[in-house]
Length: 155
Image (cartoon, rainbow, N blue to C red; front, side, top):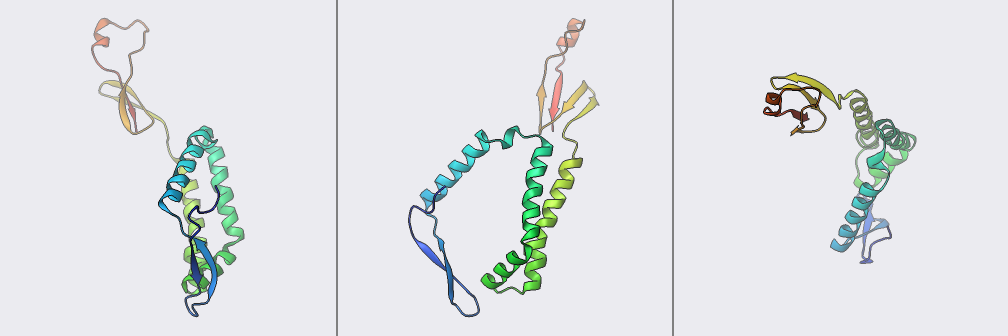
């Protein structure tokens, strides 16, 4: 996606001297709408929704590793832009996100995305967040089994 269509830029200043050290494009409503549309299309039509869990974890791990390599540069930039102490920027704003990524990866690897449960109405299948009905199997069931719903829970 190209830069801002509005061509307005806001100055980026050092907080302790007010010296302008750069400029940031100011996004208009149209810029935001266009960015959201491009992101939605990339998500729906790009590779992410078809990736396996391991492939997604690999992408997130690469992001985390890139932060790790540049964490000191990130911390210096944050400290110069907002005036926070460098030690705090390293801990909270550079290494903190890496810890969040690590926690998310750990949960993603261990989370039971699918499980089978025995319930009052029989076996249910769990993979999502809602109960959904599925027809009973056709292996010699009696007519009465067709009268009770066979629910699948998507949790």
